[in-house]
Amino acid sequence: MKILKADAGMLTDFEVLDMLRSRGAKSDPMGCLGAVTSSECKVYDYLIKGAACNQTRESIEDFKKRCAEFKKVNEKHKFTRAEILNIINLRPSGHAQLYSIIPDLEKRFNISNGDGSEDGCLLVLEEFLNIIHEALPPPPEKIEDEEEEAADEEEADDAQAMVEN
Image 1 (tube, rainbow, N blue to C red):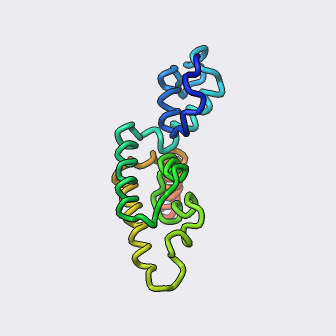
Image 2: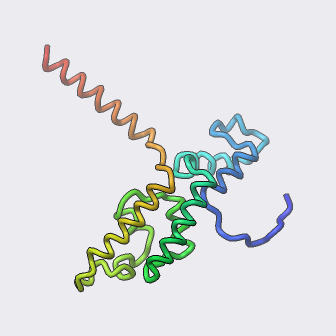
Image 3: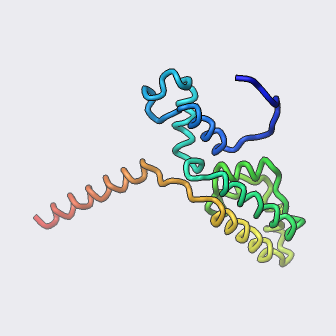
């Protein structure tokens, strides 16, 4: 492998996942023997369970364009490149997740200053969350959650059967 550009910038999880797919990585560690290293298979397994598995280049480019438009309209509410990258990688679905990604969100958006501008800033955050929801596909449902729900339903059915008898 030849390094063309030493520091080409930060990569999204989708770009790493796409590169691993092109090299032959699979979820089955035995299926990708020789094609990629075992650590690359582990990275692939991690990324395939996250938001990157549903993303496309087009959806990421659309999100970046919408972020640029958002910056133009809301000049005092800007996000850094690293924050945009984390938003793409984590795809927050609510305010709480956005708070964990963006440091000092309350100060930067004047959310808790009590000067009457709270509603406007919260509307700006809501608008940004709508951009995220429209441009980026939702992350996959957790398999563990589905298994837990199935187990809970089975237990409820068993309990119901015991009550009926």
